[in-house]
Image (cartoon, rainbow, N blue to C red; front, side, top):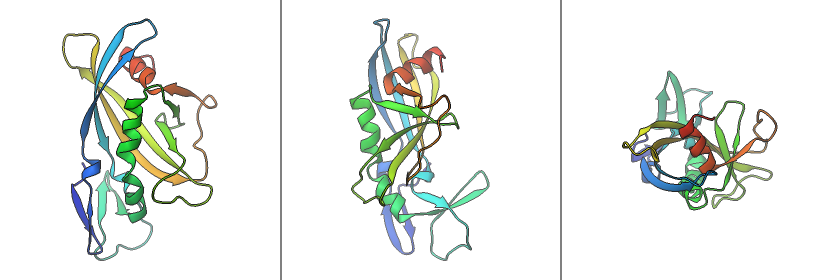
Length: 181
């Protein structure tokens, strides 16, 4: 999990916006059933760090996971400030489309950010979902895990299997609970 604050080159950064949280969503299925989801949202350190290719720097903040080390990136941090709003928009408008990548994770695109993007870049937010378990005996209430795996600007479009496969956020959760993904 991401800490609540870090110090990188003697500058403190608040990471409260990337702390685990929960959202509820009510979704009306194609068959007219209504499903209630409780979604746990977690953010990866990849949203605020990048791979390191040079020698470690004194005073820098590093994240190590699965034997790989990443360095805190102040630009990624600035872009990450909008991540909660981007994720909240999926719950406010569950008909928003997500796209599938070749890595079998999903992504959404933000065209403009408060922290400026370079010319020709878009901000990509990569997501992975899991159906954790039913919350209760009610078959219409489900517990979902949404992991924001990474988020960063890029000028190239992520390749997708089967062309440009898209699915509405709510429909994705519906299929996830019925194992039709």
